[in-house]
Length: 347
Length: 88
Image (tube, rainbow over all chains, first blue to last red; front, top):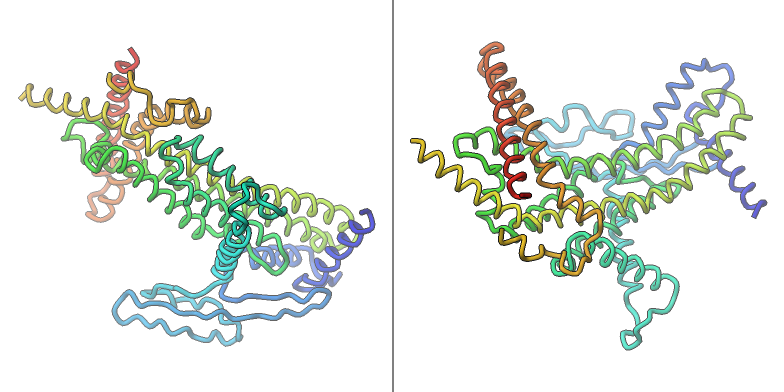
């Protein structure tokens, strides 16, 4: 065990040294090294049109250019990707003006991979002898445990016994998709799609739409719209309706930021700890920063599960609050009718 | 009230988690607080952007901010009153 750990730390150190952008030239000023490390970290965390394989123990990269394409949304906009000249095919300034960028990026590839893993693993592990009640094998048992956890502990406990099972398929999809995306980011040469705000926003919007559907199902379309008026007199609606509409978006906003920030921060911390070796310019720093980075890496493994759980739990909680909207609506409705009558009586 | 006699969805067997129960209980109060804050936000932002578009100096910003804050206060007090009545 100790030998294996030593080997792993050694390997990580050598990979970290090998993948330094400018090598470890002692004559480089510290400021330049800091800038290099910052640029290196950013380059590895943000999305790009280029998939880069770094060869371990060597100082060269194998770039794979992903296809770029867009749809013109303004008249006369040209969506032809231009070559930047350096052969890297990075996003061209002005290219997206009037052009909807639908290029395939590193994070898109990661999402496809996560989706493939999700479908593949669940098809494989749910395929068992249906005549026997108990699944056999570690993977089948592990997945059954996770699926049952999402259904019993998240869906039913937060939405309710009657409505919970209706939303379980969505919650399971969200849980496993996020989990796979988070875990994929921990492998070498991979990227974390959940550290991209566009991805987390899209996921949160799915929850948002489902929450609104749950509210409409529970309170009826009329009741749902009445809820948006805030239960005040009609002449106050021009202000109150925008307030309530804005209020609807606070929950998906919280979901978006939480997942995005948590996933991004962990990776930046790992890269930064390894970057310290080059910033301080002494190999001995690796003795401290590599074990620390390993610790954070293990924490990230835990965070991958926790964030998938938190997103699913909060989604279930919000959907459950949408389901419970019918009760608030009845009170609101009675009150709005009352104030309306009151207003008329005054006239 | 009718809904007080009849247990709410999911509460019948007490199978809801503590968090879900507390969030559902707190939801009307969170919504009331949002009305107070949101009124000011909508008033200030609405006034700012209308001023920018119409070039009416600071007047729409000032006016709509006051209106927004007032409506926010009204909505908050109205909701609190309603919740107070419901509890009695």
